[in-house]
Amino acid sequence: MFGGSSVTSTSTNTIHYLACPDCGGRLRFLATIEDRAVIEKILRHLELPIDPPAPAAVQAPAWLPGFETTTDWIRN
Image 1 (cartoon, rainbow, N blue to C red):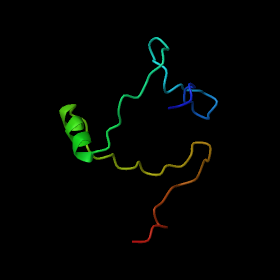
Image 2: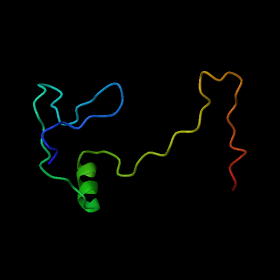
Image 3: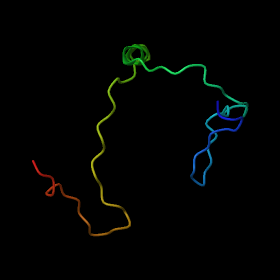
Image 4: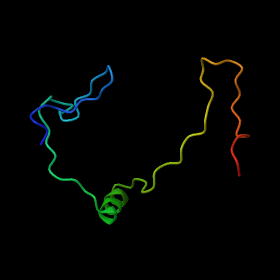
């Protein structure tokens, strides 16, 4: 499926998504779940939220002193 190589991120900190975090062995996808009802049933059983969390509020970057974030530019 992936040509024998592991999938890696493009950042400088490479993460091998198809490598076992414990032993480094190769992981394989057995199946993907695409039916929303099945996904919701699994999440409910695991007592995890079904809906994604709301996005966090915008914050000024720490390297930009004196900058205050406002929502005045948002049109209602």
